[in-house]
View 1: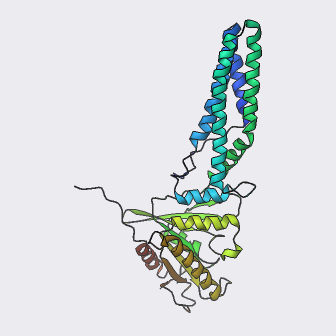
View 2 (view 1 turned 60 degrees about the vertical axis):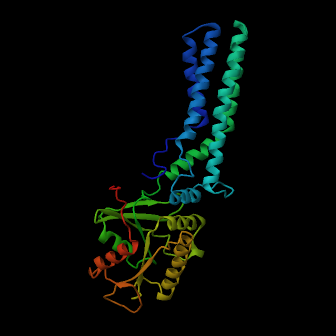
View 3 (view 1 turned 135 degrees about the horizontal axis):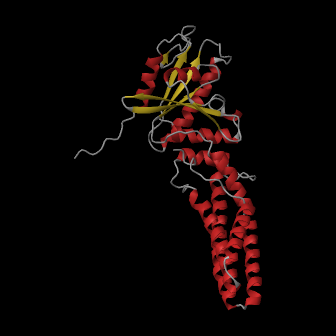
Length: 336
């Protein structure tokens, strides 16, 4: 399951206050005098405090989220001042947690004051407490809105499993990337757009020797030089460096794609530096397999393999090659 798929809807501050005070009014009608005011106070405070706390605990610990999804959260949830998404979200969650604790503390304070009040002043004290509850909720209104917007964005991220080997398919447009992915995987691939950008990602799956592989096609993302990517796309590329077990770079030497072979090779070399450099710290550089597609029209470039998807020539051979490059070995249970 993606890291943020289970996030629940984040309530607005006004919705919370209306809900809490409405429930409190019903609780108060069941009693009289000081008991009625105390019951209203406790009901409203518990609803507000519990709901605010639930907002915080519903979010995952970003320190334990897979780096791929953490990088994407950084990209798609930057605040208006450009603060990375994870830092901004942590601040929002901290403020909401503070509000929950403040309301709980005020409940104890005003409960004591109501009990020490006479029948004529208990209602006034309870109304003072309600005003302070509403003020606290107003203080975190922007934080709740930011978390709600982030939730809407993050829940649409593609379903990519960090525990399954991933092959990232790259190359300029019209070189045959999507055709290859569609050819070797299930016909109906998952498609999702990154929030706040037109860039998409397509994920296909195939199984080899009981191991499920993910083929990740990224139109609009890994088909352009770095200086042409916006900030979100740059961050998404960074996220993919945490995900990829191998990169399949597709070239078109025939020229039919509309891009010169020199530009294609420059993009391949840029990605090779990016993925190899990102993995160097782990002493496990991501292999990049270069394949020349449309080989029935031209083989005028050095590559690790040649294929023609349209003619179904050596497609399975290319797949074998990139699966071998992944070198994934399943974890076996300890057999004693």
